[in-house]
Length: 251
Ligand code: PGA
Image 1: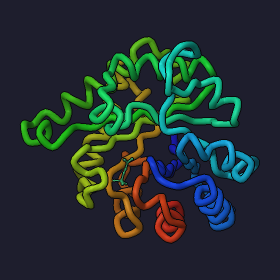
Image 2 (image 1 turned 45 degrees about the vertical axis):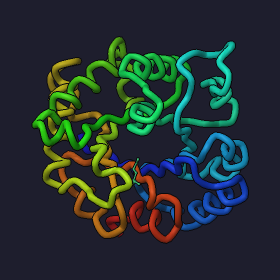
Image 3 (image 1 turned 90 degrees about the vertical axis):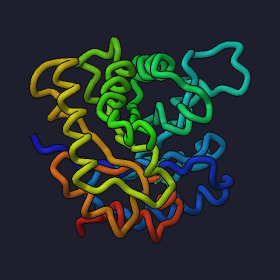
C-alpha cells in the first residue's frame, strides 16, 4: 500500500495572531494543489484566528499539545474539547521539548493519545533519542520503548489516526539532520515495533514522518527514502519561503 506523504509545520512558540494569520494565508495560496497531506500547528493563541483561513483548504489545523484530561481544575492547560471547538483536527503529542523541558513521561503522553483518539482527533506522536542515548547505542531501544508505551491500549482500529514522527533530539533546531539512511533505518525499526505490538504487516501501513532540521536543501533526499513518509518541520515552517519548497519537495 502506498503511503501518502505528510508534511506538517510546528510553529512552536512563535507568531502573534496577526503574524500567524498572514503566514497561514500565504501558505493556503502557495500550497493550492499540493498533492501531499499538509498540516500547520500554530500556537494556541492563534488557533481561533487561523482556523477560518485554513478551513475548507488542503491544510489541516493542528495543535502543539493538549491536556491529559478533558476538563477541570487544571490551571494553564488546554482541553481537547476546546481544540475541537476551534476546528483543530490534529494534535502533536510527546514532542521532545514537552518531554525534556516540561517533564512529560511516556505514561502521560499515552493518556493524551488515548484522550485525543477518543475525541476523534488525529495524533502526531513524536519519539526520538537524545545525543547521549544515541552515543551509547541506545537509539533503537529508546524509540522502541517510547512507541510501545505511548501506544499502550491504542486499538488497531485507531491506528490510522496516528502518525509517528521520528525526531532525534540532537537534530532538532541544531542544523544537524540525521542522514537519510540513518533516519530510514530508524523508521524501519518503528515499523517492526508496530508489527510486534499489533500484527505482522501493520507497520507498513502507518505514516512515519522525520523531524529535525528539515529544510528545502535536504527535504528531497529525506522524503524520497522508502520508509520516510513525510516531515515534521520546526524552524523552516515559520516562513513561506522555506516551508513551501519542503511541501512541494517533488515538484
Ligand atoms: P526543527 O524542529 O525543524 O526546527 O529542527 C523540528 C521539530 O521540533 O518538530
